[in-house]
Image 1 (cartoon, one colour):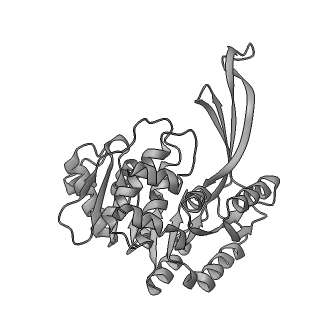
Image 2 (cartoon, helix red, strand yellow):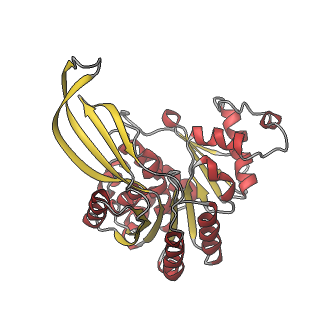
Length: 340
């Protein structure tokens, strides 16, 4: 049995806590045969529709599909969509004891209308202002503090929808570090400066570009880093940016996803980053690729993989996901088949 198969075989023994913005994804699929006489827009004849878990809940769905025991922490609104979201989480064997009801916000919902395998439009319903009910955040932190010893790793899935505040990040990171727990982050730029000393963060290229601009690594101008901060196109610029982010945030590792260019892994104490070529055979839809990456990367680390091994397997997982429509979770069987 190869080392990768051994790592994957350990997945079902791991307990993972996912904290973040949970979203209900609705898909409406149909065909377009004519343009509306009312406006120059296509008329989509609906053929089927379905709901699935999105945002941080899609991270949990990936972990569950890979065999891990998963606890979801987040908030939903007091509405029908919230009930649907809880039902979907339970259906996927995800522990929802950490999902709290917030009467001041609607459940975040994204509706995608797809015709002939092409997304026509997306409709979002959300209120990303901080909740008036501050007790929600206290409930979440108390829940995590009481149960943290049960988990092998913690994932912060920050979709920028109001749950992951500086206070929540600071409390979570302090608790994880004190307990010597693996803690990984799928980041949003606004909070980059708070992710210090974590095990890993997994930004895409755009997020890394914005981080270089926004966290003010230098006292004056980002250009003084010798980096083109508008776009990280050159390998040398990506390397410099990664090294500076790793140093500034005092991270164990940094995994930058680069789309068709693969990934770049930076590790504390390593002189050079590790480049990984993309494994995608055909890119059909990039939705959910980042969720698959952080799910597999974290689960591998919890299963005693090295960071390079974890990055290789997460790259394979991303290649599987982008070949499907929508935020679809990768399964253990698909991952086993792909590594052959």
